[in-house]
Length: 487
Image (tube, rainbow, N blue to C red; front, side):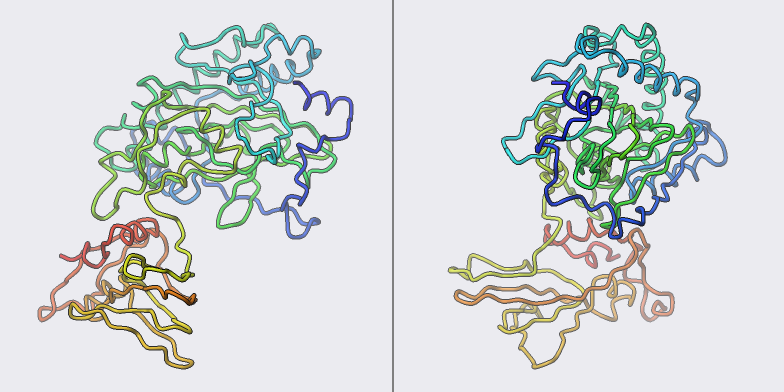
């Protein structure tokens, strides 16, 4: 059961269950480390203390959690000496003989206690994490299972109790700040999910040295199944990496900083305004690494869905209602899935490849939608709606079809039109096409250009903020941004 720790101590060869046979993409050039993430820094004092700078700090928090999904929290009112004591007592616990550590061993099918997570996926090919952990519920206090709280070192319980109390204050204030950053009327909107039967847990993580870090991971790529997560990192050894824009970045160690991650549950509740980042933990060839995460979860069985105040015509509902279940969440992790992806009301990606269909009238390759550009090739099945009538678009040798998009229609104040079009299927032949599409920057405000607004041609569209997720939501809802923005 204690195999990870004992393998590290004895220097045994790693069992196959820990090894990624195809290796791990650590860097395109092994001699060059991955770049450091320029993680946004948020000053908790400015968030929590009413001042002139509070609004600015709230916007910094919102922007960072919308684009990165994580921030480095500073001035969080947790003493540096207390953070060091947390690290120390865990290292002292790890130094105990195995028979001592096993006194607080977790049950095979349980979460709390010392050991490795239970394997719930039926996929026999799943690769195990090369790490050990000690997980303990810290709040509510009457939910604590003290039989799993180590009594050695002698001050372990005292230190964890003090730290978890400080983190709960930080946790609650941060969730309120998140709600305010989205202009929700009730700043306890997110916090109520925890207060109504939820829990907060501490998870101590131990990552031993590994001679082959290019084939073994401490934690596989995943997003947290939490509401939010606070991470206390190792003082000296890096290991946490975040995936952003299809590139892995190293998360820097900031003295006395705490890493805040958005969890999957909050991404759903915020209707995608906040992003749950994909991250992993890599290993060091010579040094062990520890960390301690503070995790908040909804009540088991609670229905999680986007809050009504964050759903509108401009930003349609993106996620279906999902029942929180800890075992199911662990299964997603071990299978390389995310609850946010599994419960989207539409696919994140539309595959531009249409296969033959036996019943054309019942099947379409693409819905009716406005877009930006299209280049049909081979078989003419691209159709455009004009004056209430569908027309086939002909194939012209070596020609490109140019479509005006919704955003150009708005910017041109309606001078250019974004056409409604669709793709139908062929009963015998496949079809391919290639689309080159241009988009504004995420979050950019789009509105009619001043030179195209006049007394003769008044402004036809209100200002809208570009969001790729909202745009895909319009498509799947059969809506057009240009219609939504029409004054």
